Image (cartoon, rainbow, N blue to C red):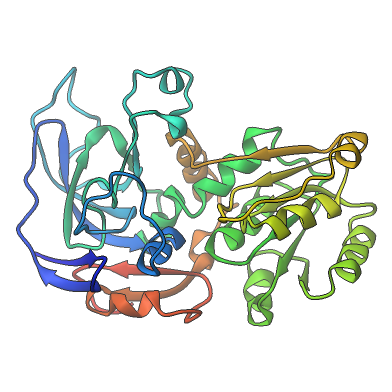
Amino acid sequence: MRAAIFRPESGIAVETVPEPVLKPGEALIEIDACGVCGSDKQVLSGEPAPLGTMVPVILGHEIAGRIIALGDPVDGPPADFHVGDEVLVFPFISCGTCRYCEQGRENLCTQQVLVGYQRPGGYAERTVVPTKVLLPKPKNTSPPAAALLVDAFATPFHALSEHGGIRETDHVIVIGTGGTGLAGLMLAQAMGARAVGAITRRSGASDAAVTAGAKAVWIQSDERRVAREIRRWSEGGADVVLDTVGSGASVEFGLNIVRPGGRLCVIGMGAGSASLPIAKTVRRAVTLTTSFGSTMDDVRHLIALTESGRLHPERLIGAILPLERIAEAFLPNALTGRVVITPGQGQV
């Protein structure tokens, strides 16, 4: 089969590789679509891959496809899936037995295995995954759009819903307009926020932010001016700030624009550090949280949101490319929105 192989010394290239071997408890998936996550772009740019990453490796962890074979069941009755079913693959394979898994917080599993890093991923025509990480593809949703639910949307959804959700009176600000930031804008709107705004450093991202649901977009240049405008727009500061950048500067700016009693949630993982004005933050009773990854229940909620018509994941797609053109997905600042690869298919 054909697959895109990443090697640190040479980058990513499409090659012919052996077919994956199906084991008990697994499903063989014909991959219809795989989203290109920012974490893959970081790895290709030279940043460290997650601990335990296979090298060379087939990257890609936002997978939608069809079951073409099922291995023998293990540890109980057969999975509730059949050959021919259209499915999504939840990319975080948890152990199911650690304290976090028992609490339903498998995103923090101490034995977690990541599809596309510690086992082969979705930049290939086929892959095998445990049946326990399969989810039904939402009805009336294309594979490229559905694939984005498992991470691009699930990560900000987990952050927004974990600590109180979104209220209909909330003004929500999203810092960053990459794929995760744009997904956060769509989610805040779908979850019922009164108004949603975006902050970006890229002037060319404004149109994409508006398409994603932003009622106002600020180019972050003069931070004091932008902060004043945001406080005016939000009637005293944002109720919720979602920071998808995660730099020292973005965290500090987020604290500056959140209202007293509001919350700042950081999901971006920059390499720097932030200076926190402790007394000012405490006096304003600001809730500062971080959030990592998501759970299968998060994706189930997203499937329901999509099937209800409240969430439109297709609006996040910036381009759809065949596997043979995957290198284009990693060009710097080439595209706005999420690039989706369609292995085995022509360009859509």
